[in-house]
Amino acid sequence: MKIGIVGLGLIGGSLGLDMRSHHHTVVGVSRRESTCQKAVTLGCVDQASTDLSLLATAEVVFICTPIGLIIPTMQQLITVLPANTIVTDVGSVKTPIVEAISPLWHNFVGGHPMAGTADSGVEAALSNLFVQKPYVLTPTPTTPNSAVVLLEELLKELSATIYHCTPQEHDRAVSWISHLPVMVSSSLIAACTDEAEPQVLKLAQNLASSGFRDTSRVGGGNPELGVMMAKYNREALLKSLEVYRHNLDELKDLIEQENWTDLAAKLEHTQAVRPNFVQ
Ligand code: NAP
Image 1: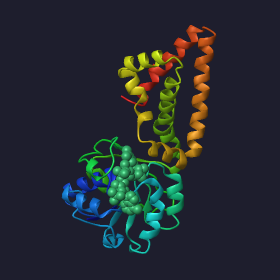
Image 2: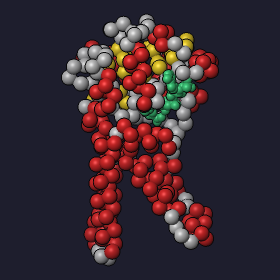
Image 3: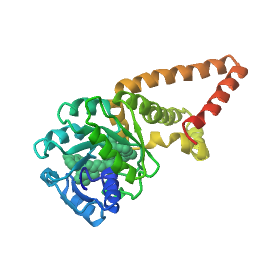
Image 4: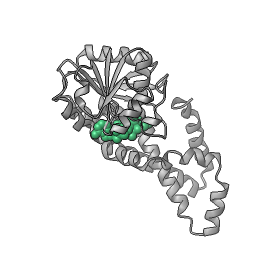
């Protein structure tokens, strides 16, 4: 099959590596000529260009640009692709993208691979990035079943675990497990730096170990990604933050009241349910 990829970065490059290893022909488009050359050298694509017309004969096109460019990219692709081309995206938020693109392109299936690293750019592309990772598809009632089936066949080759849901369900779910944790982790780091006593702050910095490393990791990540999550998933994130604040207040009340029995019960509950989210 001939696969097109727009946006040759971590996700686009990784998809290209795997598609090529499954004997598909991959053509890629990126913004910078230097990235196109690197993508060919690294084996992410067979051919690359800064011109979208390279994708005209692709059967399936993955839009892997930064999230804010997915809709504008689709608007440009309309003039280049024949109507039977299947288009999908990999954006981390689905509702605004699916709502904007579905009326523009009949054969569009929203997608989101739940895989990545802290790195970005084509140099960060990895083989087998999607193996046994969730890959969410968000078809709507008007999405052609043939498009979903063909896309699923490709994703199964990557050994991804496929999930279907509505764009709204996707955005609420990722708000809980991805976007809220970034804000919580960021506020944790910010709260620690509010320590008024400089020598206590320095001591805390020296003593910070694996627990702080785990809980601060996502709050210390790429600020641009955090802003994108808040901007494009604002409604769901605000609801999650509200519930989180309520839970934090409950913990604070229990500690103020020295209610160690209820505090223990709450911590026992979170200990018991954590494996439902992560093994
Ligand atoms: P990335 O490594 O920064 O790659 C994006 C690439 O898009 C850049 O390398 C850039 O290449 C290219 N690009 C920028 N503007 C473009 C344009 N106008 N036309 C064509 N290409 C353009 O980012 P990423 O992590 O792969 O993320 C890409 C998408 O995947 C985002 O929508 C994100 O929400 C989604 N996603 C990310 C992760 C993750 O963990 N990173 C996980 C799942 C989904 P140049 O060098 O040519 O500028």
